[in-house]
Length: 502
Image (cartoon, rainbow, N blue to C red):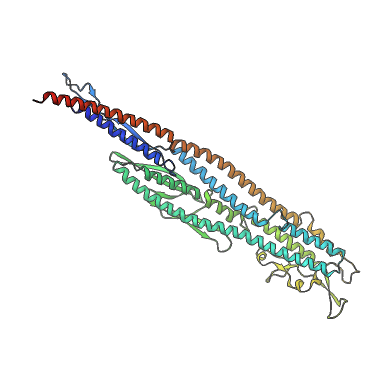
């Protein structure tokens, strides 16, 4: 039969369990504002009962021996964690892409008086004015100056687009470094957590750290996470496996238990384009990765698709800009070169001859009048025209009648023609705006979805102060009641001891 101290032992287990409950509630309350903290719950179980033998040798009835804390576990919902990371990867991708596209749009400075559209309209309006007085040196000078403004703005826009792409690549390079650091930390945590679980510990703080790293990683690149369990003696250990899709299909293992791979960003030999590869954590082989999520995915799409001057299919924003710029400068060159201009001898006011017009826009290495995308960074008004504004052609006829303005009118008409430079550039600006609007809509949708999932996740894993205060009061009441039991048992023992004393 149980000893006289049996009741005190039961009270002692209740006191110990109540103390743990209060400690857990206090820990939760203390970490209410701690980012990534998961609320913890103590699981109570009855201790093995004391079996009292009866006359038949059966161990009945059984007497309870008290209570104990079986474990202190985190409250998590793995399906919400997976949904959160997938949605966060999309949200990070859309928000980062939206920022990049808005930066591209700001380079255009459209609509506005300082945009290329306004400069083009002034340039062609200058020719309309020149057509009214073809002999005017002042009107020719204005044409030349606005031509120089066009060349400068085209270069400025081209370089501005390139700069945004380079900034995106630089940020992606930093993000890849963060990815590699996170992968190493995840592998180390996998090992440490498994070691702790193998000896019966419940490393809640380490599990939170691992989940926080996975959350952080999902903001940078799209990942798939699975949990692998293993039985060591009477304990179960868990480790996460992290993979990312490979370009050719399949997946690259980034973390597998205590092993980890690495990502590598390789810039293109020219332009802001880059490639991304990853080394498999298990096999050590390197595979190309085409990220579609996270901030790295946004940078990859911007520099390898939007700013790719020669996309593998369709058009890109950069190819559209190049086409619009070349439509403008090559079209102006064509009209300029179909005209003629007077050649004067020193001191003469009468042309000694007429010469075919030269290209209006050239580069130091290309004066043919047919420029390519590679010529855009070095675009300038023909130095010959800069030194002699008479070379701006207003007529197509040698020895024209005074006031002949056929070529000046042709230039003015070209500017506003169907599929002309103004319309082509307006189409590019419109496509840029549509891309920005789409990215903002996707960002807004993903923001809303992420907010809902975050709220659900917080309701499950987050700390509720009201709930913890209730738990604290219950644990305190349990402790007080257990203390009363101990006090009563102590009083009984004192009475017994007094009774048997001689």
